[in-house]
Length: 340
Length: 121
Image (cartoon, rainbow over all chains, first blue to last red; front, top):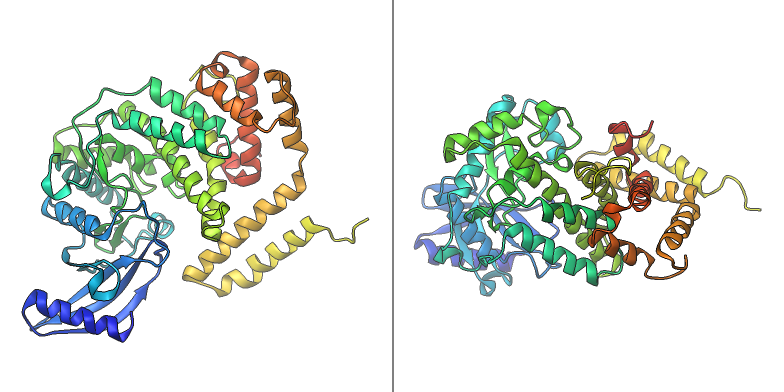
């Protein structure tokens, strides 16, 4: 952020708080291809707030949630008791040239590869996973209709059916074919569970998207995919093999950090519902298919020439592994399995 | 005849240099970026080693099964449609083809998965 933007921000915060404001320690945080995150310290009266300003990156993609929507989601989650950075102020593009919001800064790290291996972070891993189960329960306590979340469309069809239909439409229009992914979509269609009441689902709750420090979980991050869906989708996504960062032992099945049992225990503590392994299995298959579709779309941003990026390019090469695992999870192992 | 060492050998040598001499000097996002680069070099090296042989064989088999020509542009799309309409699920040979085709892609893109899962040594 340049000095003009910081001045404008100071004026904005003075108007918002009605008090003198000082801003210091502004620095760009790494890791945001779609959004920019700036650390800053905001002094209001006697209090200094360690904060993060989040705004669109110059190359932002149009289908990601807008900052005002993300701010509303954070507010709803915060009010429901989810551990998220407290959302403080939202500002439109007239202030610093891009829409932004400011939230309190959480401590710790979100680096997935580090979290699964470094047990100095949240050393009681079963408690960490139980806590994550509780966090999911709090998220799922939010149900439509909600005026503050009116920008989230309420699906008329089963959310899994919606995913399958939209994925097939995408694949029909895409330049390359993915037969194994088609196989997985067929399995999802034929094994779809009964539709449950809709609730707010994070849809990207996985290791790498929450922060921990030595004391445990400090924040649930990245609410860009959040939508009305089926609650068990979050549990399946969290347990899916593709999000375990190489930790494949059964006692690490939940996010590569802990056991499914601990996750389910935490979820049951908040919701009163004990998820069953076979219910979650469907959503783990779903997670592999959904991640594969997202990966194809992300890679296309590089392939099309719109955005040259090694990270996006390599995303294309995640797809075969996801597809092979999909085949194995759905009865085709070695080519001789039952029909999908 | 090309001058030796060939492209595969050069990529292997570059990988070794980056992994053993440079990676240890880096940390944080720079180390992550180098790991991505090493991954990309590995994929490119495996593709060079394999050449077009596997894909050509796949297309020949697929063409026979679909009563088509190997050079037909929509061969893969037709196969995908047969998966979607359930034909592949009921056909041993097509199922085996689907498995082998996916396996071949993983061999190039993520052979570590095959070792982790005990599918290959």
